Length: 244
Image (tube, rainbow, N blue to C red; front, side):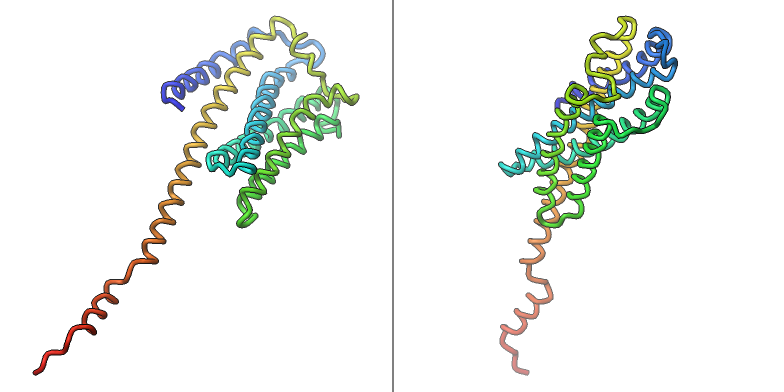
């Protein structure tokens, strides 16, 4: 990614995190039913958006690596999987805090909640597979990422297919106009943050690939090199002995 774009995203993220709290606490009205705790909405929804975005990117990259064997796709898979797990954890933390006030329980086995938990566990499995699955680790992880990305449409449509306690996807379009600036600024801020994290983590993964290649090249060079003392011994043995 171009450095100018990177710094632009950093500036947008910094400005967003400065402006969003003002809009959230001082401009957006308090929801009359749930009260102040409803403001978790402005954090919960952007985290879910980033989780979905990174899961889809991870699944697409996993498919490219699985069927085409592109190394860049494997780097993207590793990067997006970690971001999915981080923001998935944030979704699973903020959701129950909100649910306790809205439903009276931290957790119910609602279809949407269960499928989000499944998504989180799948991408945890992607990271574990990359680390511990042996020679086929990258291919196994890519297959799991592809499977995890397929869960995203199911999560989105679950509230329409089944009767669930979770709010429907029509909440945002019907949102109070005074609440929309805080939500959209939060969404933009977390999207800029996602771009920054993705760029930094992808560079780290590429550096790791480059380091691995250097280690392999150095190992091969040392394996084929003849030790200096062996060469000296060989020369001494081949040279005729001088008569005394």
